[in-house]
Image (cartoon, rainbow, N blue to C red; front, side, top):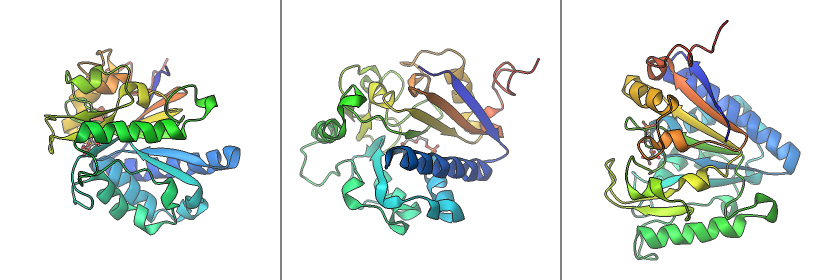
Amino acid sequence: MSTPQIVVHRDKELMAQAAAARLITKIVDAQAARGSASVVLTGGRNGNGLLAALADAPARDAVDWSRLDLWWGDERFLPEGDPERNATQAREALLDAVGLDPARVHYMPAADGTHDDADAAAAAYAAELAAAARPEDHGPVPSFDVLLLGVGPDTHVASLFPELPGVRETERTVVGVHGAPKPPPTRVSLTLPAIRAAREVWLLAAGEDKADAVTMALSGAGEIQAPAAGAYGRRRTLWLLDAAAAAKLPRDLYPPASP
Ligand SMILES: O=C(O)[C@H](O)[C@@H](O)[C@H](O)[C@H](O)COP(=O)(O)O
């Protein structure tokens, strides 16, 4: 488990641009070191804001998009192409504009009849992750380079909501989610054990409606009550905030401790 690091930006636009710059560097470094990179995408405005900023960043051409594996942290269980699907929104924000290798883009299954329900879709995605894991990953999911998460106002991450069964899951890597408080109610989500397989986990939160959630998750709350508190990377856990989301952090967390 890595201790969270907190970076605060002036506003959400700057946060998205800085996170995009950081992600470009991370992907380029991973490709230089290992030949390819893997990133897990999130849904939500902040995650899509990052992708849109990346699409606008001139340095995006430094990335070899054909050597990038993309996965999703969660998906709304809706038909293929539905505008509310995280995949659809990510494609519009960035993916359709860069030269990805389709075989490396691992969409979560859509509600198209192939899988009976979100639980079957989750099991299929878990199998896809397990097939991609190598012996050095020491587990049933690849060691993602960066896993992105938006943070909800109730501290949810991916589709793991406080107190619901998904956040309590300790065995499976992907679960079907039913009765989610954020619409749509039926979703597919990585679990905390799968999230924690990532080398780096980056949590994004902007706006004053996130201030209580950010403070709760970073002030010692348990992960069942505050799922974001249980989201950390093997090597690094990075909270990327705007000033409004950071406004209620206690002084010993923000600004960074000064003598
Ligand atoms: O599919 C989703 O809805 C998400 O993946 C969800 O976990 C999202 O990231 C947060 O709710 C934050 O969303 P915002 O960035 O829009 O606040």
